[in-house]
Length: 106
Image 1 (cartoon, rainbow, N blue to C red):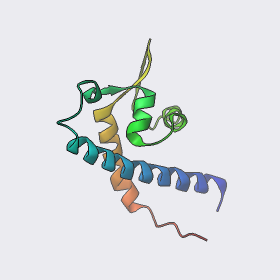
Image 2 (image 1 turned 30 degrees about the horizontal axis):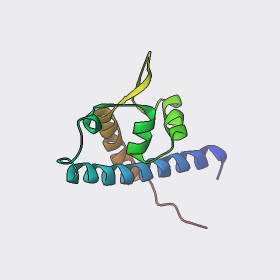
Image 3 (image 1 turned 60 degrees about the horizontal axis):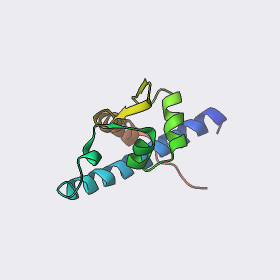
């Protein structure tokens, strides 16, 4: 397998994992909706809160932004990521991920 194909496979696996974690986080959000504070319901997230939401590192968020994969806005206070756009972004990749072939462990 050449390097480019391997990188694409790794990136698609990373998105699959983030999608699973995001679904888990959404389920947790629904179950905790009545006990959460107004601050946790904000629509726009910092990189750190987006990383927590997707259960990945902040470095991964920076990489996704650099590749243009993740919708974001940059203002005077730094990057902000719209939670609704992240949810839509992940849903759009769900159909693509379902079409990927299974990866066989060696």
